[in-house]
View 1 (cartoon, helix red, strand yellow):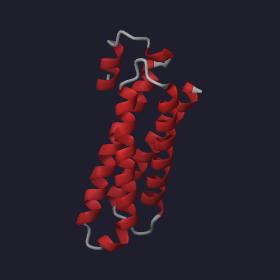
View 2 (cartoon, one colour):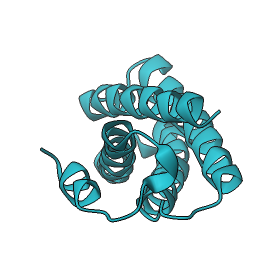
View 3 (cartoon, rainbow, N blue to C red):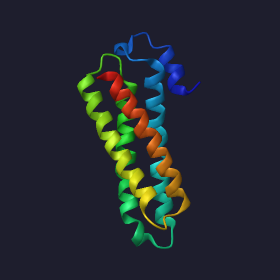
Length: 135
């Protein structure tokens, strides 16, 4: 059981009727992605040809910020505004898609970028699933 699952399981509110497992999965995916993107950006800065990795670094930093913010908003889900949650989830899907594409599609990117792309895809899917459940 993840930390998000454990804490949500004990939450006294009904969390707006959202499935707790789906919510926990999305929160964990957001924080995992924020961490992976931050580390990938840092690793890119340590590569020999940083100039060719500028777009990757920028995508990583944007994605890390959006994912972290989304995870925090979703963690405060008791009585929250579903319109705000939807907007955050949509932004997270977009940021993860853009970062995942940048990390996966650019020729010659280092291995950490491929790993980051996979994490971005998982977060994109988790956010899309929760977004569908909120609709």
